[in-house]
Image 1 (tube, rainbow, N blue to C red):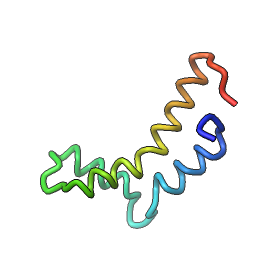
Image 2: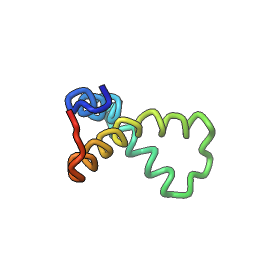
Image 3: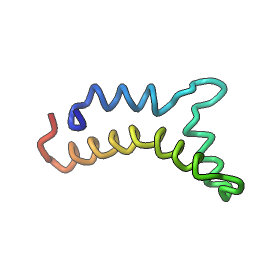
Length: 72
């Protein structure tokens, strides 16, 4: 499943961006982290990991595809 495009793209655009309004959750967490992460707790880092993992999996697939590795 981790080497298939459809499930990874689906995860990135659903879990990776949820909740969608007023802004994607991952964007807020990245802004918070870029601003010095003042006040971030362990739960916030876990949340960042949870919403960021689908994007890392998608990036991994893109790198594998560009490097010529066999990707389903």
